[in-house]
Length: 387
Ligand SMILES: Cc1cc2nc3c(=O)[nH]c(=O)nc-3n(C[C@H](O)[C@H](O)[C@H](O)COP(=O)(O)OP(=O)(O)OC[C@H]3O[C@@H](n4cnc5c(N)ncnc54)[C@H](O)[C@@H]3O)c2cc1C
Image (cartoon, rainbow, N blue to C red; front, side, top):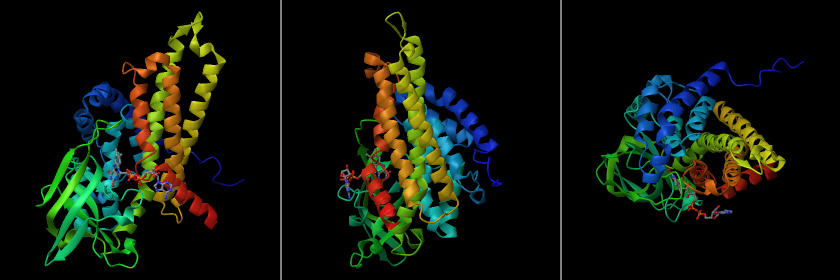
């Protein structure tokens, strides 16, 4: 028998972590989730609780005073927070997204500048790739960075930046060589601090969901940063930005799994309680089969997310397929499951009196950001055709 047979399960530490985060999320995040959504405000209670418990950025390596949690553990933290409040789950998720380019490619000096402040919770990081005219087609970005003596000077606008205004550090991709034969080879990555001259943030976008997580444009008007704030060599920025996504698409998958799990649990409680035709609606096979499908899809998505996260952690080659598949599958599941959860609540599900309405709105973004699910299918089909 294969000696590894039987070891396909999460470590005890992972299950213990899940319990700890679930308990914190139930007590300190869930009670505020509806009001955070209603008032479209940053979930300060969740932020404080996550920082205090050391769950705001578990991925930061121990060498930068972090917890050094592996990628599956990071997914579990995000999943458990998303189970009660998707907006709050963007705190650990975007801290990883914003710092992954630094961890992957920055100089030791730059890592030392940024990472300990993220580990302590004193600062958060955002990731700035998208522009109004360069969404799926990232390489067509227009933000420019020019070396001027000992400084880089940035000009341009990034849009859709999650947690902008709350974050201290911004990982920003900008064109440094507009004449590069391949556009992607003319892009570099930089670290910008919120207090750098020429940096500012715009008003909050008015969104369908994840209303507690601010999404804003960020502006660079002759924004001047020291030369050593470049991440890696000039021209490697887009490569780093895309490698980052291999590590963070599983985290969006985890967020999607968490949202779906929260919706399933709410639906199960409701159908047991709600009576029609003289019995619980959970006694109807039509309802039971819906619950079975919801649970089945969530379980499949969860496993795919952990497998993708583990492969990224191990640095396996050709992980584009599995990380895209995990993000795409889990987010499609989240959309289906939350829609079915609203259905199982009947009219009540369509109101803000129950959390499934918010969960359905929150689920939608997981199909859009970090590459739309069409783009994930482009990535997957390329890998399939390549063989
Ligand atoms: C709430 C929110 C938070 C975000 N946070 C961040 C962030 O923190 N940092 C950041 O950099 N970005 C962020 N984004 C941006 C996000 O990643 C982009 O919105 C996304 O990549 C899609 O780009 P787009 O909006 O320009 O859509 P477009 O690229 O214009 O796409 C429009 C439609 O065309 C389809 N499409 C495009 N190209 C193809 C193709 N080749 N084949 C098939 N279909 C295609 C898309 O799937 C989509 O359905 C965020 C967006 C939102 C809404």
